[in-house]
Length: 479
Image (spheres, rainbow, N blue to C red):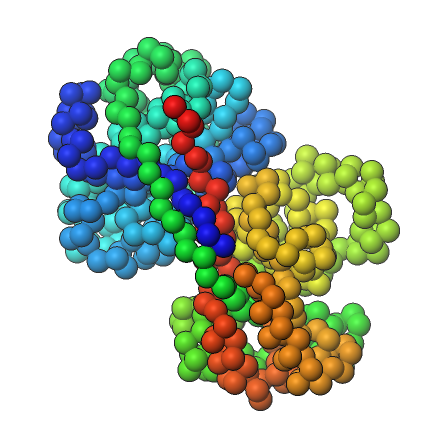
């Protein structure tokens, strides 16, 4: 699927303009900024708590990347170190330095969280600490310039930026925070660059009065190539999915799960295929180490594969009662599978519901609230055959799976023919295989992967979601 990712760029030769606007030389580095239609880390939760906002479509994430030549002195892997860049908002691109969460409310723009994992956590890579801090110390200033440009381009009249006091009040109490850092990021930068007024816990910036203090970026785009994409996913659940319907098979699946997983990983390593492993949260600690060490993507497959009140869901699906129950779960912050998954890991981006059942809990609002970026489910449950972005969540249809090998006694030969035909018919196709059904296809797995690999490019669901998000980056307004 050919697409364009739009961005705003400040090239190295533009430094003089920043100096004229009052910036310090040490605060400048060349950079790009993407305006992404998604909730940044805790973006929805913060907007809901601070402003009572429940519409995810009013939320944006602004992502700032340093560019050459300043990033050339650092290894690419530094920008993808998960212990360093904790929030993992790189979208596959080198040089990500900072992000901001934005809320558009009428003609006002609220910017709620300013983050630079790279700078603020660089002590974890001490060999780069001094250079990173020197090169990128100006990130709060450049981020503010980008925020003001977002407001200017969208004809917003006022920008509200949190004071350090407000930012500290809503910071997780479990974190050890330095007040001076918050003052530098949230107070000093904004009051140095712009004419501001204090309104409660916010700094208010009148856009028109500060227009001459903004450095306007150049508007550019990059092309996202069109290639046939195959996403291989595995639901890692052992016998959990059959406890209530086929206890004997569930017992077998639990016994075989570890052997199946290791064989799947061995064959994928041999063929050079990267897959997405959707792991039940209760199994995550036991299974993820083996999966991630080979570079595969990990997502959640619920916490324990239980679908609460499934009979009720099936009975009222599509009625006014379903809509009412969805509203209730949102209002009361329903503690279900999503919340339990987040107690296991706070950063995993994707969710694959058991049996592709989209329960009341899986509204876009709840997924955003719990920091999920994509949802993968059957094409029938989503009503789509290609990935889309809807209400700030990327939805990815699963087009083919291995359930019929177990349920319908379909022969492997017939199943493979149908799988390959499905791949031929779609530009982006997701094939979903289970650890519990692996004995049906593992004897033929290497040959199957070689056949599929010859038809297109394998990508993880994180990679596909990144491309969908980038294709929806804000297009510059016509001038």
